[in-house]
Image (cartoon, rainbow, N blue to C red; front, side):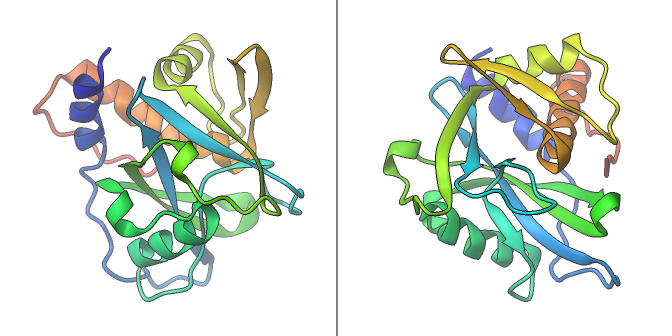
Length: 197
């Protein structure tokens, strides 16, 4: 599948209404970007230099609430994580809210294309490695395996290396891939049913 085909599915996947401010809740919240590089296309995942308790070793750029809205929080944390400013990101939209029940945390997820990782300004004390995973590889893994959406796990082969994506990052990937899969089945122009998880 070429990038223009994926773009149509990205647009359909991001038809959820984006909150303009943080929903009222007693739970902690944050906002994260699923960064797509358009050469294959591929999804980029970060590997932490130092493991963080209760957090995935492989993670997405973003962070906890620090501004009045999820989108501005996502932009501010992405700039801290990988040095990209809003003008560097082509945002498709708001993928949805994923509640991480075991952490009492709500993750607001955005989808956008970004420059190649070679152009990122990475802090080596925070980011040890970057994986660029073709979306077709992720889709094949998603279709071939039954996932418990409460405890999904991806075993990915990239550049002769095998790595595992689990915990919150894997759950968020399932949200993206499920919406892309439904968009593909429905065909372009059809509205997806609402999926929060």
